[in-house]
Amino acid sequence: MNNPEIKGIARELALHAWILGFCVALLWSIELVDYALGGWLNQFGILPRSTIGLRGIVFAPLLHGNFAHLLSNTIPFVVLGWLIMVRQVSDFFVVTAIAAFISGLGTWLFGAPAIHLGASGVIFGYLGFLLLRGYFERSFVSMMFSVLVAILYGGLVWGVLPSQPGISWEAHLFGFVGGGVAAWVLARMKREG
Image 1 (cartoon, one colour):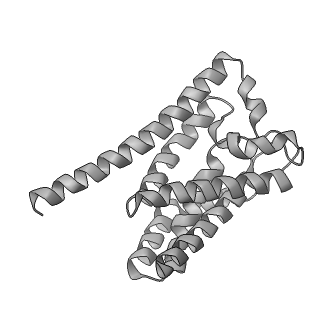
Image 2: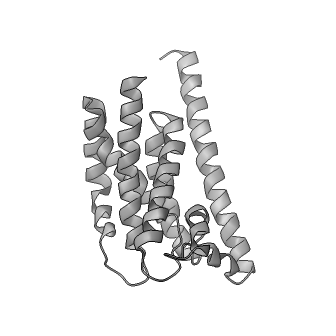
């Protein structure tokens, strides 16, 4: 590798770090404000099948029940989000938007009657995208990448099933579906573009 290539890679990694750092700082800042307000912001989560609960489709991924909840989402958000960015930064934004929307809408339509919040629907969207991208793209590299992600993070897939009270498996399931939809959309765009 020559010096311009190394500088290009360094710039790309710095951009990844800046985007992910900004997202994490935003999530933690919101949780700090929510903590100072005694959890008042959590009312903006998804309340299934209620008109007021529709706003949660937008706000729920930004809100968490407490710092432990946010901490448990931070590391997979960064790792899986970065794995999406490795190939193309714009994929991160497309996958995030599609996963958040489908996770939120599915939870609003089918979720248990409680307030649902947290970034885990988006995280499961990242997982769904990374696992299914190889299938939809049909390239050797993307298939091998999907296999690697399955080996490293495949155990998370069990989170789409009801397992623990108080955990929104609905957000996980529909987030995973959203990630699959994003994989299909982006593969189709790459074939047509």
